[in-house]
Image 1 (tube, one colour):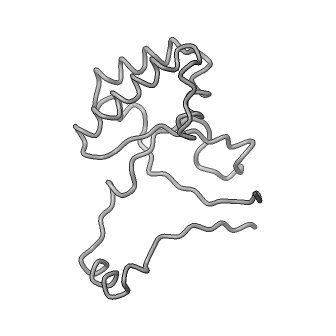
Image 2: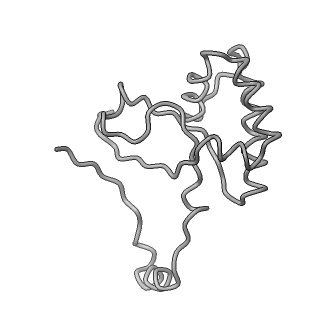
Image 3: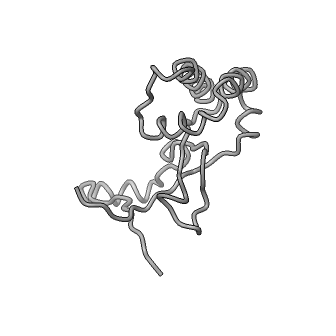
Amino acid sequence: MGMGYAGNFAVTIEEKDLAKQVPAEFKTFDNARKALGNMFEEFARQVSLDDVDKDEAGFAEMQLAYEILCEAFKAKAGIGLCLGFHNQDDEGDRYDDIGGVYWSLFFDHCFTYTPAYLKLKKACKGEIRIQHFVTFG
């Protein structure tokens, strides 16, 4: 399989704002995170790849706290939430807005199509889509 650049974006929320939305669940999550210590970034990396090793010490508890937090946030805000990780040094660029752990909101829960767009999409038989690309320079 070939390797190349891929464009990415995220609708992010600051952790302090997330904590205000679901304080009890966030506190439980934060306690599990503190118990993991310096392994939290590795947990976040695995979550972002959808491949959490629950045999790793503390990861099963962290996964449960994470899932409860996400469910509580969705119930309160009506928007899906996920933990992400971006290694800016190894896989990114110095101009990236994100480096390390971040919280991302589900794009399609944040933005809706206008009636005009839906009409055009129907007329085009659904062949309108968001596509990603990168530029260099």
